[in-house]
Length: 212
Picture 1 (cartoon, rainbow, N blue to C red):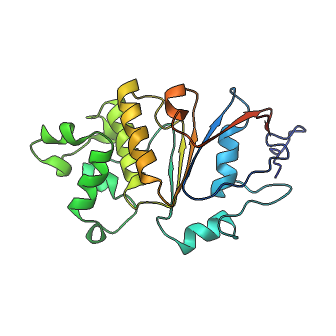
Picture 2 (tube, rainbow, N blue to C red; picture 1 turned 90 degrees about the horizontal axis):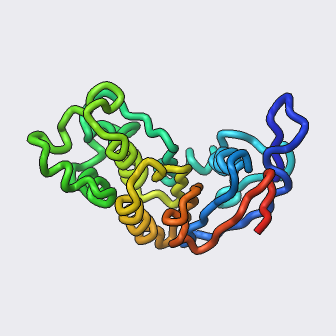
C-alpha cells in the first residue's frame, strides 16, 4: 500500500507490504517523519490508501469496526478526557448499563490505577475535572489505555501511548498488554526500547518504507 498527502509529491507511505496474524505484538519504530502515525491511520481506516489495499479479516477497516463494535481499540499519544467521573471516561461511547463496575475496575487495575483508586473517597465515581484537571498526565494516559482494554479488543493500536509514563509504569502496562494478546493483535508505535522489547515482531520504518 502507498499513501501521499494531498498537495505533496513524495509518498509518506511507500509500497509497504505487511501481513500480521492474531496473537502478535507488532512494534513500529523509526525516526520522526518516517510515516508511523500515518501507517496507523491507514490500518484504522482513518485514511484510505492511494494504491493497494488495507484489510482487516478481508474487509475495509471501517467495515470491520462496524461489524465488531469494540473489536478495534486505539490509544493516541494525547488521550481525550471528558469532564465527568472516572467511570464515565472509561466507558465512553457505551451505554452505562452495558458496562459493569467489575469490568471498569479490572481495566483500571490492568493499567496500574488500583492504588490511585483506593485513595479516592468515591472510587470510580470520582470527578476528574475539566479535561482531567484533577489527574496527572500519567493518570490521564492510563485511563485512556484502560478505556481501550475495556472491551478486550481483537486489535489494539497504541500510538506513542506510553511516552508520558515513567519507565516502571510503562513496563507494567507492557506486561498487561502482552498478557492480553492471546488471539489478539497489538500494534505499538514507539521510540523507547522499553515499549518494544516485548514485541514479537519489530518493523523499522524510514521515509515511508519498511527497511528492516
